[in-house]
Each structure stands twice: as structure tokens, then as C-alpha cells.
Image (cartoon, rainbow, N blue to C red; front, side):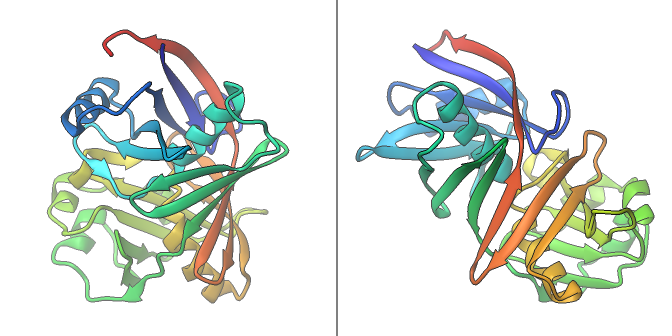
Length: 263
């Protein structure tokens, strides 16, 4: 039987955070089949768990493309393995992925992901960026995947209504917009727009925090921080910069458990 779940990642309650479909198949399928199921699910990511030399493999697809790194999909996959009884909670989940080996550890009701750091370097403003987001950036950088934009206030981040067609013309996976936090317990806020990869706005983006964490760690002179992604669903992400790695922590909630019939 092929199981197909929907899990809300970086979520304190059902119907918050970022939903991901998780598919556990008895064997590999073609890339076109994975992409077709990703399009069928219409989630920000569909995570496919397989076996590779006795260990777990993991791939992620949006409705239109394969992702090279996906935090909420990895968190959902680890949650699936523990909740389905395929791994004891005392055993870390270890996945082979297109971004190397990724691990997840259970810490009470939190899941801690060990991801590669993708620090940003200062960059020129892409043509049309300010017009697309509707405000003037204070700082612009580029990470391995995305454009990182700092704006003046957290309220400016929360109130953004960007021109998604213009953002889709920017040569990057997505655009992260961020500012220092303005509420107790939140060090920074962010939003993530990726219309170029079929995601107008991602609710909570673990991989974006691999760039946000080193940026704000430098700005605030602390390696351990708490971020809030201020989408409509919203979600908290605890981060810790450790050398060339970033620890990302969040909670997960199962909202659907089902069986895939076309396999």
C-alpha cells in the first residue's frame, strides 16, 4: 500500500503553518510521475520518501517543478516516519537528498532539522524589484537560491501586496522579504514569494531560513533566534547557526491520512 498524508509543518495547530503532502511508495517512479502527483496535490510541496541502500531518500515537487531543498517538506517527512511507526522517535530521520544528507531529530513536540547554511552576499537590486514589492529595500542579498530583501519595519513586511507577475521575472527561486521583529519573542519576520516556481506565496519556508538565520545572526549578534513567517497561515521557526549548518525547529500536525490508488 502507498500512503499519502497531508501534514501541516511549522504549525502550532491544524490548518496553520505550511501544508505538505507526504507520499511513501513501495518503489521508485519516473520523474514525470512525481511531477504529475505534485500537480495533482497542489501543495507548496509534495515529499516523496523512498529507500536508498537501506536508508531513506527524499525528493520534493511543487505543482510545476522539483525543489533542490525544502524545509517544511523534510519536517513533514520526518513526522510521517515517526507517526507511522517506521522509525522510533528516539532515532533520527536521515534523508539522502539533492542537497546532501539531511537529518531530523525529535525534541519533545518539536522537530529539529539539520540543514546547510545558504548565507547571502550583498547584491545589486534586480530590475523592477522595488516596484514589485511596493517599497524601497534597505539591503539586498543573494543566497544560493533566493533574493533576500530587508525592509524598514515588520509592519511593512506584514502589509506587503506584491506584484507577483513582476516578481516572477526575477532570476531566482524566490524573493524573501524580512525585517527585525517588533513583538516579544520574535527576532525577525519574513515572507517568501516564489511565483517563478509555482508558489505565489509560501506559508512557512524552512529553506529560506537557511539564509535568514545567518543574516540575522550577524545583525543581532546571536546565533540562536526565533523567526515568524508572516503569511496568512503563519508559523514560527526556531533557528540556530552552527558553522556551515543551520538548525531549524518547528512543530507538525497530521491533518489527512490516506491511500494512493494509482500506483
